[in-house]
Image (cartoon, rainbow, N blue to C red):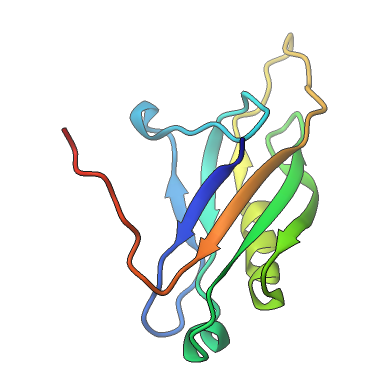
Length: 127
């Protein structure tokens, strides 16, 4: 199972957004790992893709090191090359909670799927 992000359409040229996942209610788990994200970077929608009305998705896989950084970041699948670079940069800039001294490092690959859609993302109302 992979974590899926909907990339919002941002007006104008927008930098990557940083989401602070320190709130326990907002924490997420990536596929095949129990490492908790500290900062999740969401890529901006590429200007050329937005201008040309191109949508798509990219799945990026990676390992998380002991200090919480990502390594071995690579594109697993992609529907359009325009979305690959911002997706890889977002994963490289994201960080995870570092492991404690007595915790073992799991060598399991994690994957994130970024969906680039020109339609507003559907959110569920709070109960």
